[in-house]
Length: 238
Ligand code: 6GU
Image (cartoon, rainbow, N blue to C red; front, side, top):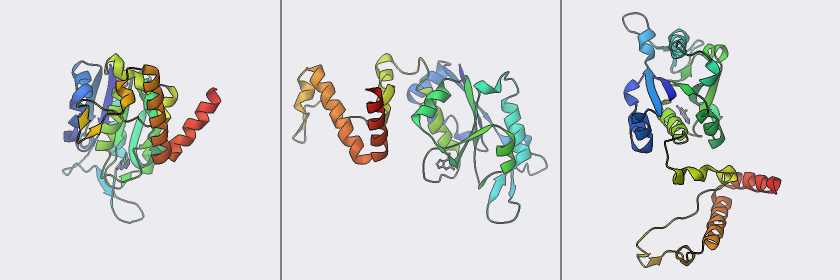
């Protein structure tokens, strides 16, 4: 069972979308488990403060090192080797998430995730713990909760038993750098638009060729960055 622990000041956000579809089914089938840790549990005083103003002044509040530190320690309490349970901090400052990273994370025993909120966390947490800072894209969310669901869903769908055999074949080698080709289903004609003839031909060699070509055209057009990688890996594999 792949163990997911999430440190969040908004535990009500979970399981959220992670309870639906194949990922929710995998949760029920115990392919993975989910636990949230609310830092407030470790906060002191009447107000149970988890955040405070930034040293040096300026706007916003930071999650406190003492409270978050205790939350991280709680995640690792019953874990023998930390190496199999990486600690990921979700923040817009992190390394952009890629499928290659998702694949690596899916091969671990589990993951501990810290969701950022407010202006971020005390820098000493990042210096003290082996934290991987990860971003899900170049835009700013109000917190890491939705980002963590993105990350967990991308991992769980790769775990053995989550997807059927048919679906699981698409994450192969350098198809990773290509966008998916256009797909069609019945009716054969819709608003007077027909399904491309080759797809109805029954000739699988031609169909595969057509699909690859369409993927290449699309990738070249909308993702020149992926297209560059694809061409590079294609020539190096020849
Ligand atoms: Cl992981 N967190 C926040 N707050 N904003 C983001 C993000 C994460 N990734 C992209 N934007």
